[in-house]
Length: 105
Image (cartoon, rainbow, N blue to C red; front, side, top):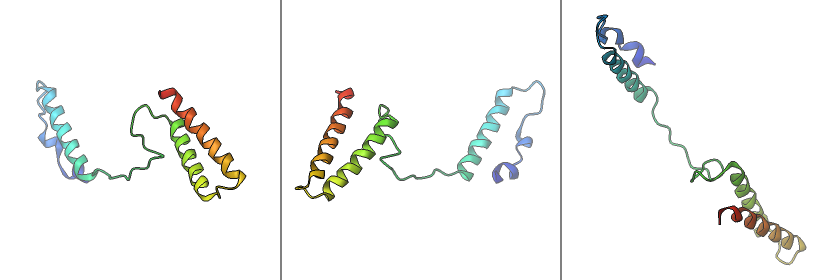
């Protein structure tokens, strides 16, 4: 915003009524893009596999399923393999993975 305020764009424009409006448009466009690059730099965002999609076919439901699968995998690793709870978690994890793979095969 400071670039737009400090630069006097009005002086650069052609004020002749018969002037080509495309030239004035180009001047305004260049000034706005220049101010944008100075005042609004690109922001680097860390990739989060539960928020950002790698492919366009990944839906919000799949992202939710991936998050649920990862939580179940963590539970599976923390559970004692000899317990009954381990088999329950393992079975539900396999069902979830198979149900998510079917539409894309």
